Length: 360
Image (tube, rainbow, N blue to C red; front, side, top):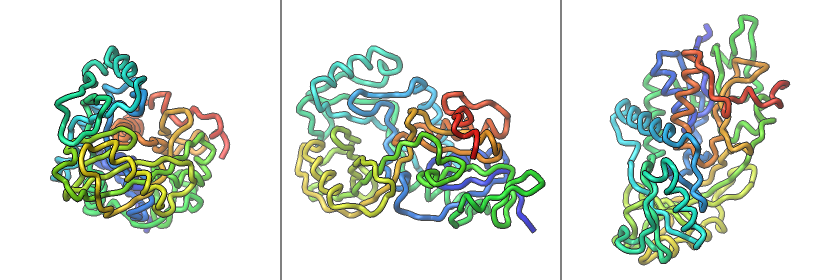
């Protein structure tokens, strides 16, 4: 007998995990299909930095206040559901890299919500171990999402609810029976929503979207003299994030390779070479892990959410780029409200507005 679902979610990265969590919390019958690959995905490779402002020009979405509020609401709710800590609110220290940054900082501090989130450039009394000869600014409102705790915890949570299948779903094997549902193997669903990261590039429903492909690598290190290293998140030419067991995740590289592949010696050298510009102490460290992943982004700058205009049961939540920790909670809730309450998606993320999707 077929198993009937309201929604089949494809992919258990941060987008698929949060979407399935919200849908189940609203009482829908949901199943997540994920191949369980621990490497090669952007979510698993990410350092989990939740930063309101990024890059040399301190870029931020216009609706930053709303996004941050949803992040705190969602991650705290998941912590209650899982009984474990997944979100660590803390300041992010940005080491100034060039004189022009000083003007960008002041410009952002004159705007909302930058006036509440970005501090003045400091040259003294910085947290231990931060290397910032040109000064550093403190960015509040964000922190670090423990991606391993979040994804593994939700994976167990789904399993306990018989809501997880470990398998690889080929989009070509999703069929449309006469009853108006969508079918895959023995499952029947009212909607199939693809949250499969780089898998979208070959998905016949979504491959024509304006994707921006970015491959990244990170390394996890153990410092030889940990007492000299920062205890805070530090960004500059790269990022340095304290993680579990006295380790740090250093990231990330950017290139336009179409597949994750294996970690490379060149990327490791580039990441380790950034340590003297991040920590004002002994930089010798032992590499204990290396990860790669593809960040599916959007050339329009906006993520993709919603349903296909020709096959309305086929949905997507993808294209978050390097801002998955910031965008995923808000997008997952909006897409849940679209499914459950019929609330329209905001136009700037609604994938139905892309004219290239009018034919499959």
